[in-house]
Image (cartoon, rainbow, N blue to C red; front, side, top):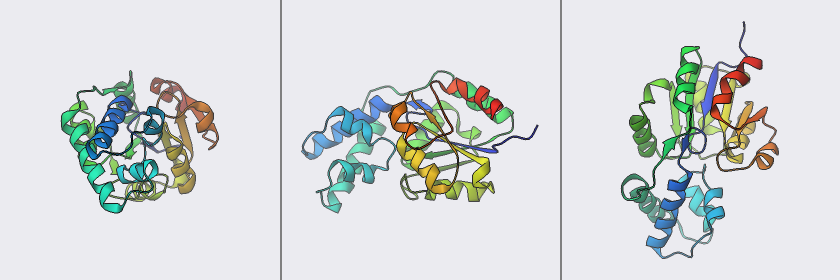
Length: 218
C-alpha cells in the first residue's frame, strides 16, 4: 500500500516531551535575574515554540538587542543546569516513535529549542538514533518561518506533499503552511484545539499514541 507521507517532522516541547512547566519556570527565572517586569504564566506559555530571542522579543518588544542575548544566556543556565522541574516524555511517545521507525518512516525534529538543549534531551531519552534530521532555532530561522522545515525536506529529499509537520502550537501550523506541507495538530501541549484549528491542520489528536492509527487511515 502506498503511503501518503514519507517524512514525519515533530516539534519537541509540548509534542514529544511534557516540558512546558520547566520552560515556563526557566523563562520566569531568567526574567527575575534580569530584573525585567514579570509576565503572566499564559504569556510565558504562549511563546513556547519560538526561538529564545524571538520569545524575548515578543514578551519585551522594547528591550534593546543586547538585552535579548542576556535573556538567552540566563534562560539556558536555568533550563540546562539550575531548574529542578522535571521533564518527561508524553505517555507512549517513545514507543510510538520506535514503531514509526520500524514501519519505515523518516523521522525528524523541528524545534524552537537550541541545539545544546535538544542534544541533551535526545541523549537523556535515548531517542537520538530514531531521527534522520533535526533543526533548532539557534541554527536556522525561528518558527513560523518555513526555513527549518524546508532544510529538513531538502536534506532528506522528500517533497512537501509527502511531509507531515506534527506540533502543538500555531507556530508549527503556520510553519507548515508557509512551507507548503500538511500539518497534524496535537491539543495536549501549549495551544488549544480551537486556536490550532484556525490554521487548517488535517486533524487534531489528543494523545501521541493516536498517531499511528491516524496515519493508517490517510
